[in-house]
Image 1 (cartoon, rainbow, N blue to C red):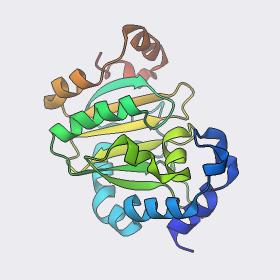
Image 2: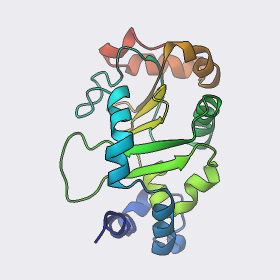
Image 3: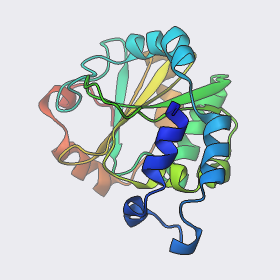
Image 4: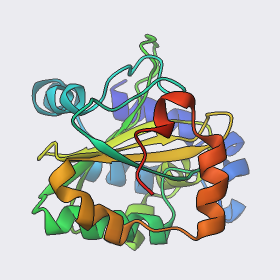
Length: 215
């Protein structure tokens, strides 16, 4: 069984319906999930050859993650309230940033925290211009990616100028977005949150982040 089929067999289970907005009678459409993975799933060779070096350029402490710092010193940071990988408005705000940078594609990489497993991690590659509706078109695969709060992910593009760490499973879920200093205006302009949310997020930040986060 290849990696995609393993993911299909695992995540089509009704167990994962618990986290989904999909109706029960529409859940677990394996042909839809398979087509989605064939279109957007990132293969191991491409990941290891092209994307993993970029991931290692952007992110540090990948096997520990929060409360440890996950971005190298050359990145400035924004912290937002998290919980799931993306909601529609969050995605479109970040997309506005990376489209302006000329990204052609971006990837979503599940954090395995350095642990080996017989089950392959979720690794996806999307065109930068993908719509939210298309992201959510994969039935149970999309639901696990975008609606389940118990996985953590690295998100980044081929420029290595920015990245997002989605700390969904941290004690207080956070989205940490890192970017090169010269891009501060772009990211600060697009990634905003109400002041009351920022006050909450500031209380949640681990110590290593308090002096690094822009607000």
